[in-house]
Image (cartoon, rainbow over all chains, first blue to last red; front, side, top):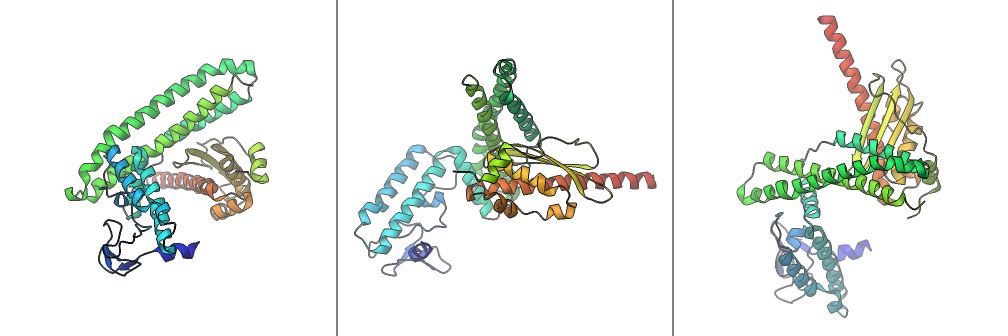
Length: 241
Length: 139
């Protein structure tokens, strides 16, 4: 399996954003049409290509969903493995790998939160230090709720009814907090990212501060989602046994 | 995905569930979380100040079976060890002992982080104690 992957990798032309066509050795632009201009063979998008580049999009938070879909469909059609079933082995591999990459890219970019998570990972991968603080207070609250949940599950059915209002109150509280974090992410933090595009030459600190805020809020949202699921599960299962 | 017998055993009979007094100067508390899955883990150790031996350990975990088993095992392992020995516990040891599948490796990482955080908290407390004592001496 591993050597198959290596085989499909294009040879990188040193110091330029160019690749050599695996079939005819013509130089091909890395962000070009995905086909060799000389022999017409499809070219690997490259495993290290980021999802934005793969779909021909700038590294922005604001993405037009319809435009994203159109790009994904067009590229998926170009590389669809069905068209290369009778092609050369390398061509089949390129088609499969490109299709898999495009699907991953589409899944990661279509949802704004997933997109932000990916952006944070990309920036961290590029060496940006993103210091984020674990939310200690939220952790304590979650462990407190965990205790309530354990007691609730262990309680006799008639005792549960008495404990229910307390859990309901916590659920509402956590839900409100979850919604607040989500609004903060999508309405306050995300719009602040796009003006920091490379053309605007943002200071590294400015970028890192915003990324840390985004990373922390995404983490908080995940913790809140998890504890909310726990509360909802316990409250909906209570009638059953 | 099936859990190993050891995970199930720790999940059904977790060892050392509970809390220690976090204000006790000889108790170190580590609370850590995994934002990828939303799991939260608290691990506390009580250390004999003379011998540096961990005489008690407790945990509380909000998470999946593997996270609970990892923290339960971690408390079992640190008990009776000296602080330096406890620091040497690696998440891979936990993975091996519990036969955790690749998707659950982060649970073992969380347990290792919790041990380290608890020890760091203890050291911070002792550092502060020494600071106040030094201040008292000079003041």
